[in-house]
Image 1: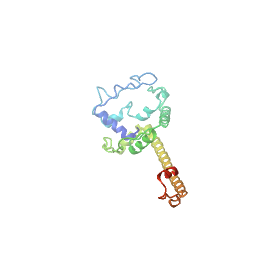
Image 2: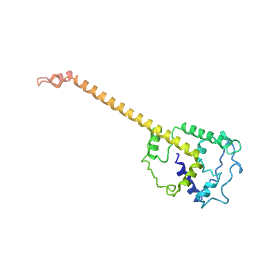
Image 3: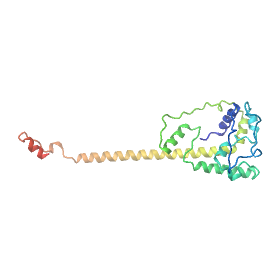
Image 4: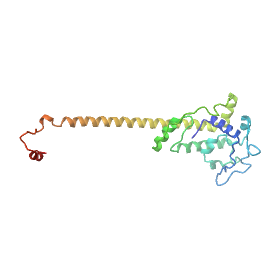
Length: 231
C-alpha cells in the first residue's frame, strides 16, 4: 500500500512523537547493516517522544524522508546507505527508477486514498472476495494537523522522490483499474449476447416442434397395452 507522501510523513511524525522507534530494524543491504556513520540516529535516549515537526524535518538522516522509494528500490544499486559512493544527483534518479520498475512489476498494489478501487483491483487480480467493503476514512491524525503552506512545501521537498513515485503509482493504478473495468464490461456484454443467442435458438427449435393437435390422439377404444407399445 502506498500513501500520499505528505500525509504519510505527518503520520510517521505523529507516530514517532508518541514514542515509536525502529530500533530493532536491521536495514540490511548487501548482507550487512549500515554503520553509525552511514546512518546516524536523529535523537539521544530511548526514543524521540515529543519531537516537534520542525525537529523531525531538521534531521538529515531521518528515514521518514522518501521512505516509500527507499522501501521499494534496490539500494544495492547506489551503495546501500553509504552516501559517499555517489552524489545525490546521481543517486536519486537511480533510486526512483528502481522503485518505479519494482512497483510496475508487482501484480497488485493499492493506494490508501483509493480504498474501494484498491479492493476492486485486489479481488479481480486474485479472484478473492472480502467479506465486507473497504471504508474510506479520511479523518486521520495526519489530516488533523494544521499545516502552513511553507511547512507543506518543505515536506514535499524532503520527500521529492516519494512525490514523483506517488504520481507514477497513481497513474498506473488508475490505468489498471480502467483496464479491468473495461474488460469486465466487455465480458458482461459477451455474456448477454450469448444469452440472447441461446434464447433465439431455443425459440426457433420450439417453433419447429409439432403442435399438440398434430400429435396422435389416444382413442378410448385402445387398451392400455397397445398404448404402451406406441409410447
